[in-house]
Amino acid sequence: MLADIHTDDLTAVVRHALETTRATTVCPFHRDVTVRIGDDAAESHAFERVKRIARSDGTNWEKEALRMELGRQLGAAADGRCPKCDPAASGHPARRE
Image (tube, rainbow, N blue to C red; front, side, top):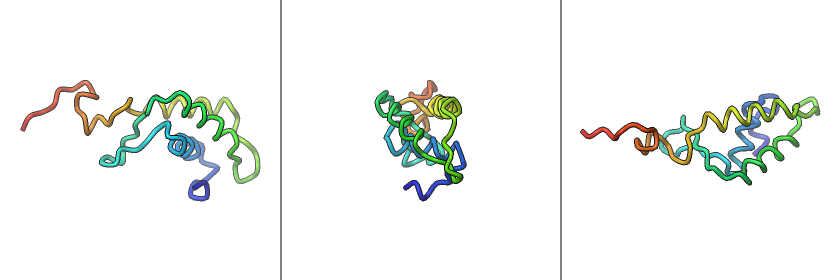
């Protein structure tokens, strides 16, 4: 819910928009890993959603700041799979014990 986020925190607002539109998800086993789903429509929807979220003073975020933060978070997210769950997704061979 929007009430659960601090609307003056750009990082939190963008993360909320990406997660609620299903553009990204958090690995259920590794809460520190965000996974990019790769759905262009969901990513566009996230941008449209976050443009409409106002800060506590009623002003909207600058569009360029939103684009930069969306790009940063999408770029930092793992592509398609959690690399901790699937070692092949990280490019490292699986370690045998």
